[in-house]
Length: 583
Image 1 (cartoon, rainbow, N blue to C red):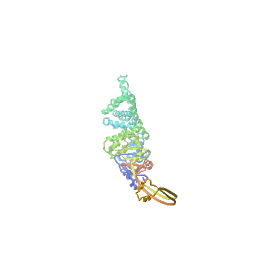
Image 2: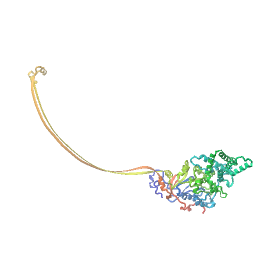
Image 3: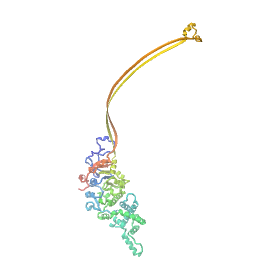
Image 4: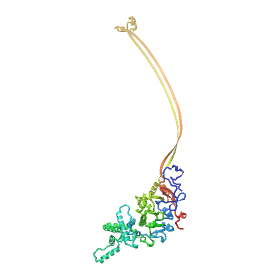
């Protein structure tokens, strides 16, 4: 099934693989309590369970709900929170999950996106969590305000955002300590931000008139609101100080600054003005949501937060609000495990639409110990980097499971290729060289020489002095020296000689030689070299794990496993359905 992978499969050639990167061929089998991941190459069901988070990154319209979310909602027995922007997950699974023995279902669906029975629908009033006399009243108000306030992300509007958050949190506490019934809601907070307190202004102006002080300045609706807050009647002194302090801050501002702060607060709470949202946020005593049951209910609770895609740009704060408060309450209940025995699974579909949430950032690193199992689902890695610039690696590093399929953007593909690691291959090179040579040489030399010579010679000599021997004999052999000493000694003599020679010489020589040689050779060389290469290149990942292939890459304990995705409408889950589901 995966035989077309270019590298890293463990087979007969594995002896040539030196690196540590490779495809894992054995994946943990699915059983109750584990997340469903798909099937391996042999058709076996694969699942995994630990106390860490899971991250899924898959392209748009790739079947994330069909092959990942819905199969797990059909099998997961514990509590879960599902960010369900389209209402599709609630439509497909809410009624079935309601058949889990004792399990409760809560569908929060202001716009009616999900097709579910009315008895499964609930409302959600965040101010129900605030007890004005409790020590955590300020913290809960801050969590509500933080969820609704979204800054630009570039730091330019931080003053206006922080000042607006301060006003909104104070107004939340003000309403929580002065209103009752349906008026004790975020709808009333929005009214005070946009209209002021007209009723209190009328009362103050009436008191002034009755007092006979007709020349005194009349109260506007906002004058009355700030007046009411500076004189807060909250019994909790800390709460009272927060309310009054915010009002005095507004009164100390210049008109331009005050206008900018109020404008920021109104913009961030605009979603509350929707008629659908008003009905949901004002609450309903007969269908009130108890978010603490996610952790405290022995049989579990499933919360579906539904919002149509067309409302996400303007109403994402509603989803942020729910998530912020639920995680806050999960942490507040301590490190005890959920009563149902399994972590609370937070399926965060379209995670990027929520923007940056500090509580999620914190949960990614710390809250696994509080029984929280986050499952953010994104279209590409760039979405995570954009909202969590400094901590996106925390999400990836603290996940026990990383799931990828149908990825086409280079940011995700490059990261994925690097994350899969490199493999060392022994590359053998064989070379053969054939050679032949032929040499022919010829030489020839010739030498000739000749010569002729002739010589003539003649000599003539004449003397008048007698022969010395004759003189000596005649003189009685006197000594030669005596003879020579004579002054008048003389002699005459003549000698003639002649010679003649002729000669001639010559020679010739010639040499000639021929030689030839030839040869042939053959050389064979085998060399080995180690090469490092990615287990898969980005383009290979894009091609081999395209949406049409049905394949996925899953990192389990940091090791890559290739699995087949399973669509809920094509997989028969009946034989493996958990026993808790009613027959």
